[in-house]
Length: 169
Image 1 (cartoon, one colour):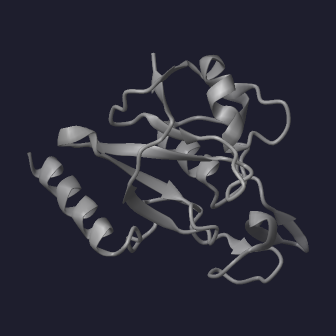
Image 2: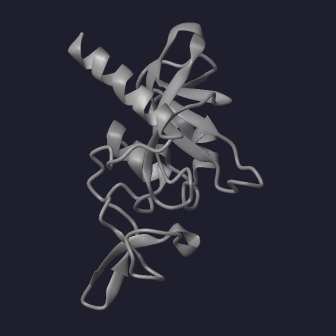
């Protein structure tokens, strides 16, 4: 019961903040810096956040996705890797629906907590977008936790309806 109350309070705070909630959602790579600017905050060309060691940059996590992007956040939260899906190429969010069965998911239009909310490629988001469903409220409102929806590599919560949800079998 305490957990449910905490989720409701966090969702309300996120809504009050205009979809931005402080924090990192526990994401372990929130400190990855922009390769182009070296900064932690602000826009990052081609969304390439990472770490520099010995003059070399690493922008791909151990999960196989780009740091501080929606795909890496959702993969981390659900214990997934790029290899679970068997993507051809980078594994942009737009591909997650097509390759969901390979990773043990079914595509549905009914959201459940811990499902992946999925959006296809669009003019605004050419790579598509994925987020984690954290609450399904009365009347079908869906609250998602996500990274990089704003293109700035940040974590937030918001109420959103996705065209599809990926549900673990």
